[in-house]
Length: 127
Image (tube, rainbow, N blue to C red; front, side, top):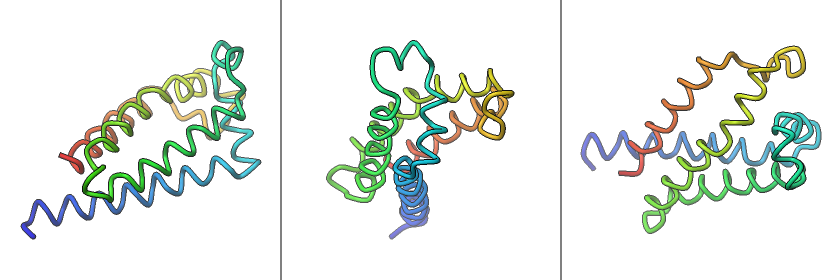
């Protein structure tokens, strides 16, 4: 295993642990309620917030497992990138309403830059 292979392996493990942990947290009732509240109302009119939170939790868990399996690694990485893009509106909604979301309302630009950085790390780990 070369230096880059080892680095990618370590990054994959770290990402898998992070995404798996975050995915499981979507099924903790108190956390799920907070996440559901972050979903913009326009979206919750179409799909239940509880269902969206559970679905995104399953997506994170599947992505965590998928990036560890060589046969699914690239597809899982692309799916995680799309996932991170798809959930960003909820993060932006929280950032726009700090009085409502408290600590979850991390300021928009730092959150945006962190999301872009995470996307780049996922891509680095799977290519």
